[in-house]
Length: 258
Figure 1 (tube, helix red, strand yellow):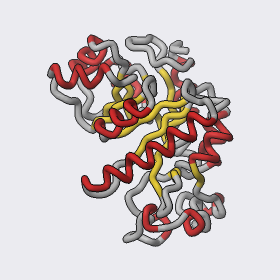
Figure 2 (cartoon, helix red, strand yellow):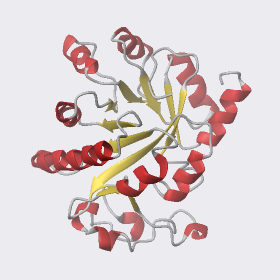
Figure 3 (spheres, one colour):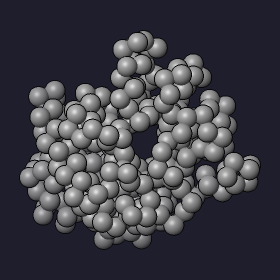
Figure 4 (cartoon, helix red, strand yellow):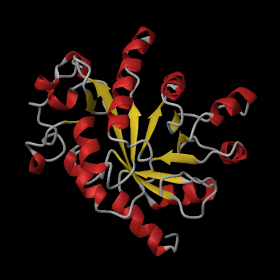
């Protein structure tokens, strides 16, 4: 399945940063585990290194590596590749390394759809750098003919719209911490998107209905507990993003949703 479907009674299960409750997030080991599960997509985070390499990493700083004042963008890929991306999670994963989008696309895109979240980092003047990152990502996708295997996500709708302008037909998902007001401007923006993703804690039934009226599915994070799953089901969420995709697949099977 590659098309998000509104109001489905069989929600997508999307592995949040891979199987991130069981393995170090955004690493090959987390993605390897997620790829063995009956999921519909793997979500991951992208930022640029000092020379513009799309690096798979979520946080604003390198605090996990003992560098709380340093950012991905201030280090070259050669420097970043030396960092231990697993020890902070569990000593068993010492030696795990950061990875790049280049590696992830080659390793997983033929196996499971990927949801590529472009993180918003820096002040507004950094928009140009983010556009350059998006252009690099689009080039990687196009050269591999993976347009039907990936989605692009961001909390920065203007960046997504720029990406769509660069590559018409690109499937983008607008991330929201809080639901937007049900205005014609929001409805118009949604029409350009493949879907919208809202924090489960702030999502409302009214916004789900609004998005569905616009013909767009709703994704939500993070569905990690029974209470979360009940709320997602009650709200009519179409895509359930989870740090525990293995548990969630088992839960949905148990209640007859799969």
